[in-house]
Length: 612
Image (cartoon, rainbow, N blue to C red; front, side, top):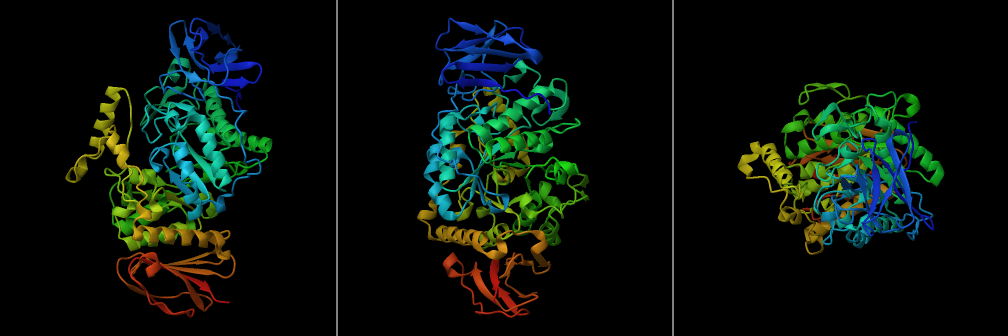
C-alpha cells in the first residue's frame, strides 16, 4: 500500500489539536486561529511536503485557516467543518464526544438492503439532517432498510445536488454540519436502517476549490468534463490517494456510515499497477478488522465491467456491488417509448430477459450510441452485487423538466414497474417520493456565489437542452424557485390514490422481506420467460418453497397468457389491479393450475404462490 497518514485537525482531549496538511507547493505554512488573529503558529515541514504542528489553544469549535507563504489565508483541504461556507475558516471537530447509542449495530448484508435514495435539502421542509430524522418512522413503516444520501460534502451556498463539493471531509453546514449528520446516522441505526453515503472521488467542484494552491491534486494527463482529472497515478499521486482513502475511513469510522456509493468510478483515471479502488478496498478491509463490523463499497459505473466487483485474488478490485443501469434503461424504454440519447441502445423486449438472466445487456456487444463494443459477462456474479432502480437522481434530474415516472406513464404502470424492481433478484433502490407517485419534479439546482460561474451553468443547461425548444426553456438552476419546486409535497396523506400506491409498495416490500422464495434471491434460482409480442414477463423464484410466480403485463393492452409452471396449483397472493391498490378491479380464480390461461389487465402485475 502507498503512504498512509492522518490529515486535517485532530483534537486530542487535554493536549490541544494536532494539525497536518499536505502542501508541497508552499514554502511556509502557518496556522492562523481566528480567535487570536494576531498570533500565527508556524508549522514544521516534514517529508513529502507535509506540514504539522500542535496548538493547545485550538479546541472543538475553534476556527482556523492556513496562512500560505506569508500571503494568504486558505481553509484546510481536509477540513471537518466549514461553518461559514467554502470561503470561510475551517473548524476543529471533536469526534470523541458524540453520544452514540448504536454499539450493537452491525449493518445489513447486501441482500437485505431496500435502498431509498434521498437529497437532504429537498426531502423535508426543513432541508436538514434533522428534517430527515423526522421522517424516519415513515420510511421504517414503508419497509426501507437503507437510505442513500446524495453527497453532503461542503459545497457553495445552500442549494446543490452535492456534486460540486470542494471539502470532501466536511458535512454541509446548511444541512446541520458534522453533529447533525451523526445524529441522523445514529437515529437511522435506532430504526434498523443502514446509511449509504454518496461520495465523489472523480472530480471537485469549481467554487471554493483551493487544492491547487496546496499541492499536486490534479493532473493534465487526462481531460474530464470538469477539467483536469484528480491525480491518482501521476507524480505525487500517493498523497492524493491518501487524501481520499482517509476521507473514506473518516466517514465509516467517525460517522458510523455503513456504506459508500462511489460516484462515476469510470472517471477515476488510474493506470498504475494497483488501481486506487483496489487500494481503497484493502484499507476498508483493515478498518473492518479494527472496528469489528462490515462496511460496503458500491460503485457507480457506465462500463458494465465486473472487474469492479470481482475478488482481488481474481484480478478484480473487490468492491461489494455496483449500480446496474441496463435494467433501468430496458424498463424505461419499454414503458415510456423514449429512445433518445443513450436510450437508443435499448427498447428491445428480449433485453429484459437478458438483464434478468445474465445481468449486463451489453456484455461484449457493440453499442450504437457509443460507437464501440462495451461490457463484460456478469452471469456468474451474484445478483446481490447489483443495485437496480426505476428512478434515481440522474434519471429524473437530468431531464430538462425533471419529470418523474409519475408524469410519463399511467398510474397502473407505476405499480407494474415497482414490481419489476422489488421482485427482481437484484438489490432494489427507490428514489424519494417514488413510493406514492410524487408529482413535483426533481430539477437541477445550484447556489453559486461566483456570478461568472452562475452564467456559465445557465448557459450550459440551455445548450444541453436546446433540442427540446418545443418544451420551453430549462429552469434556471440558480433560482431558489427551482430548488423549492423540487421539494417533496408528501401529498399521499391527503390523496387517496397516492396512499394506495404507497400501500402497494409497502406490500411488495413486505413480500420481499418475508417470503421464503425471496430470502436470498439469485439468478440460478430464477426462471424467466418473456412473450416479446405481448410484452408479458413470467418470473419464477425457486430458491425456497413455496415458489413465487410473478406475471407482468408491461403493455397498455389486456393480454392472455398461459402459465409455464413445472408444478402447481398456484394461488394468487397480490394483484396490482385490485381496487385495494387503486386499480380497476380484476377477476382472478382462487386457484390456477400449472398450465392455466390467465387474463391480465393492461399494465398489471399478478403474484402467485405455489400451493402445497
